[in-house]
Length: 249
Ligand SMILES: C[S@@+](CC[C@H](N)C(=O)[O-])C[C@H]1O[C@@H](n2cnc3c(N)ncnc32)[C@H](O)[C@@H]1O
Image (tube, rainbow, N blue to C red; front, side, top):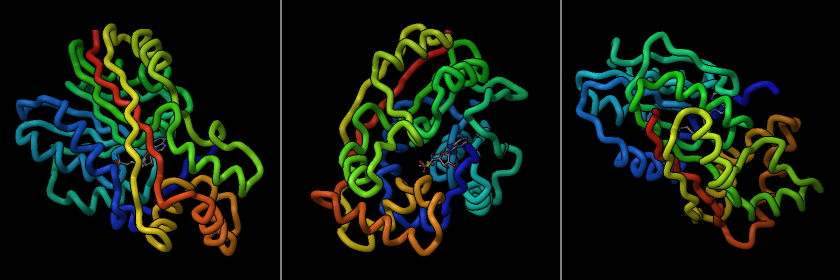
């Protein structure tokens, strides 16, 4: 399936819970300031920027599949120079870097990748021995209420078509197989309450339903998002986050 290109402009204007997901993850990544860090699914570069702030003598390799997200990232970080390498790549495919990195980081991207075995092998190949992998994404049960509303609108169950919301055991098994012997993985409910009406619809349309909207003619997109929003019992996106902290063998 062709990769989704995101509405990067709208994305950065939204009240994104991704901000605190990124902050929480950065707090779990000890850095002295000289390391090389891989940002997987960097999007518009909000956390890439925070990583660069913590790496005055280090560098970041920022990878994403969306040209529009990467254009926003470049605009955000015009002066990063050779401390920043930006790479457009499809993370469903194996990723190979020219040089190993000391850590890998990822916010809100894993659930868009159907095959975590491939991804975790890419991360292990990119990391030096002892390198740390901190990541988070949608886990088992993520956005279940939105999926129920979607099923009422479309008449089908769409979870497996676009998303991968794995559980802890499966993730631990795949991480071990890829070369992370003792991973910590947890599932954490983290519902996001939004303002009903236009703000909720802009959020759903940009952050959650982009893959669905791409399949619809332009004039049906807004009504589709509104129909899903109206079927939510309250203006809440019931996120359940899968958090990973792992060290490469
Ligand atoms: C919800 S955004 C998260 C962006 C950023 N990490 C943040 O927290 O704001 C998900 C990102 O994953 C990227 N993505 C989704 N599937 C991808 C794939 N197969 N290969 C590379 N990037 C992908 C999207 O382009 C998007 O930038």
